[in-house]
Length: 444
Ligand SMILES: [Mn+2]
Image (cartoon, rainbow, N blue to C red; front, side, top):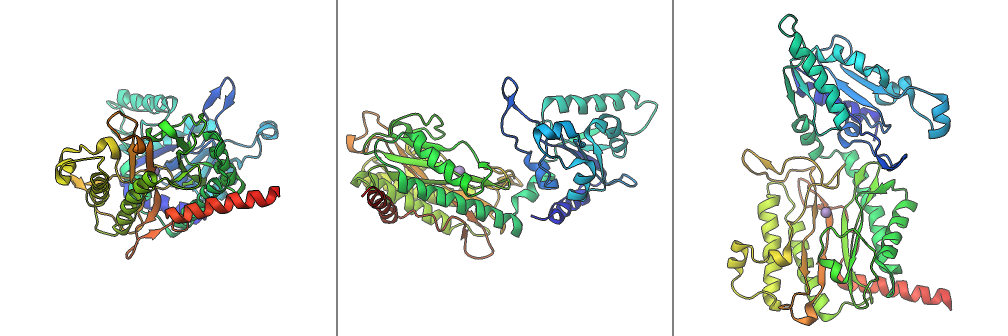
């Protein structure tokens, strides 16, 4: 992505801001334990508007300022720190890299921020930011309040900038789609590697390691979210994170994992049998979920409503399947109406995808669920989760399947970014068999 694209985004925000000033802090470094930090990850809004990934950075947009409409505060050069921590862009480097009007050292933020805040009666700032930063903004607002009787200037209103930026983030540019597609391609290779290399006797974390290794060696900077590798009784835990268990022989393995590439997140789930072949019951559940997945993907077109039409069509297929298998009895419409299928279906059909795995942007508009538009990227991830309660026939116990794809809405047919990641049961069985025979050859 070019710095021009980030500059263009700032221009659009500046234009939409009107009589306001905006402050977007970068993400703070976060402590994991004692003095060691989590891997640093820039704030998505800040990154969207700057493409700048260093900590201790703040973007200020001030359309009414006489000369500096966009300002970046960053860490200045410091040879000693850089010797320890690596190179920094520095003040001038950050200005050149991002194309903002001016850049300043971060330690000048306190003294310079007023110069920007005083230009506008309205401040765009999110109190979802880190509390130290919130306190600083509050102290400015308090200062303006107490002096207002004698002196004009400073914001009277503080407004969350989410409507400004998140609506933009919801519609992806060609460059964003290209990056998402690359993240999904890496993720596909990781899922296929897991299918090829998984064996009975492995633990969940071994499969997770294959996925993480494959993403990392293909250049992904991170996993988009903590991967889920669930087997046995863990299959029905939607956000199962522990990954400590031995995969029971005969179990399905549900792998929900995505690469993060250049800040864009893939989010893919595949489910396959550790033995390499689905049991008849596993296969039956699998085919129902796959049918729901395909039908929902086909509906990802402009004007269709994600949270009603598409979700409901997917749920209907899942419930029909449960009725066919006898896991539910009674009337389809009644189950849908009373949501008595929830025990097996658990969650909705999907979510926005982008710089965040559960990407920003409102699912609603004007009091109702909004229709899809070209440029939106969604996940389609129907699932069925059959637990091990006494009323479940034994042969169906602990069978859960989720099949998740990433889909770009276009003016025409849906563009399935994950189209190349195998999901037909027969394809998965073939890949797993190939993996096993390749390993046998290696040994022989
Ligand atoms: Mn998802």
